[in-house]
Structures are given as C-alpha cells and as structure tokens.
Image 1: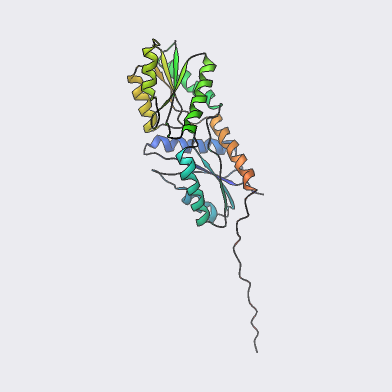
Image 2: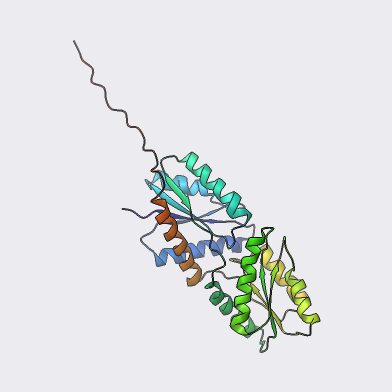
Length: 264
C-alpha cells in the first residue's frame, strides 16, 4: 500500500523569504522521508495553489492525500480556509481520498528552536544579561488560539526563570512593543523578544521593528526550518494518515463494458 501524499498548505506571503522557507522545509522533509511524496502549496499570494498540486498528483495516479496546514494556531485560517480548500478539492477530484491534518500547534518542542534562535541573536548582539522575556506571535481574534501562546510563553519563562509576557502583532493585546515598554516601566532594562513565527514576513518584521524601538535588547529570528518543526509536521501527517483509513472510500470511475453486437 502506497503512503498518502503529503501536501503542505502554507498561508503564503508577498515576502519571497516566506515561500523560500516553506520550500526549504519541504526539502528537509523529503530528506527525512524519501519514501513519501511531499509537495508545497499556498493559500494566497504565491503559487502553486493546493488545487494545482492536488490536480497534478491525481493525474499521476495518486489516490490519497493528506493536506497539512502549516499554521501554528487553530484560528480563522484553520477553521474556515482549510476546510473550504479540502471540500473544494474533494469536489474537483472526487476519486481522491483527501483529509486535512491538525495544525502544528504550539507544541513544547518549538521552545527548543526558539532557544537556539535566541542564543544566536544574543551572541550576535553581545547581550549577556536578560531580566524579562516577550513571546511575540501574529495574534488572533480567537481567544483559544491566543491562550495557546500564553501557555507556551509561561513554559518558556519557567525554562529560564524569567518573567514573560505573551504579545500579539494583530487582533489582540498587548503588542510586542507594549509588552517591552511595560517591562521597562517596571525597571527591567534587558528585555528580549522571541519570534513565534514560522517564517520571515511582514508581521515578524513589524514585531521586530516596533519591539526594538520600544527598547528590546534582542529579537530572535523566526523559527524557520528545523528538525523539530519537520518532526512535528510528520507527526501530524501520521495521525491524519490513520484517520484517512476511516473515511468512506472514494468512488471509483465506472468503466463501460463492451457490448457484444450480434451480426446476421
């Protein structure tokens, strides 16, 4: 039995660094699992679309597809856009069995990546002392998604025995700049900001620029490509692959049987 194809579905960005990061992650995944068919697709801003990728797979004879939303939170895109993509793909390719996996989520393993990015930033900036942390993410109007960031921030602070604030670039407060300013008002002068973003782009750049203007001594790079992120992708893929077994089988094409014609 051939394993289902894995279609990474990223949000997409006008910033070319974002797509480059996604393609680098796919390359990393292929090196880890050379037995799998793995492709990248994007919801918006850059090609290919998920329908282009799934259509290509269908034309090559692939029968099962796991669509993996390359998202950290189960917010709007995960709840609205991704199901819409899967429904449309099933409509366009009725002979394929298609399922969406869970999002990556705010898994504890991401803190290992965050720490590496922060250590690199502190070294480059020759920062030797910290007395507070801010964990910056995109933000959402979904309170449950934001609560996941707050939980991860708390765990990050416990790791380093430092006070920490979860901050949001959009749709929630405080912003990264507000969080940095609040710590500075309390007398903490060495505040570092961790970037809880998967790839570079407009929002990570905004978080960094505003936090530095507010007085942050360091802002880490986004998570980017790492073994931890890749393993998390494969974990979500594996669970979805098992769920795929419970789906009703896709209808098979009806093959017309030849009719025998009697001749006089």
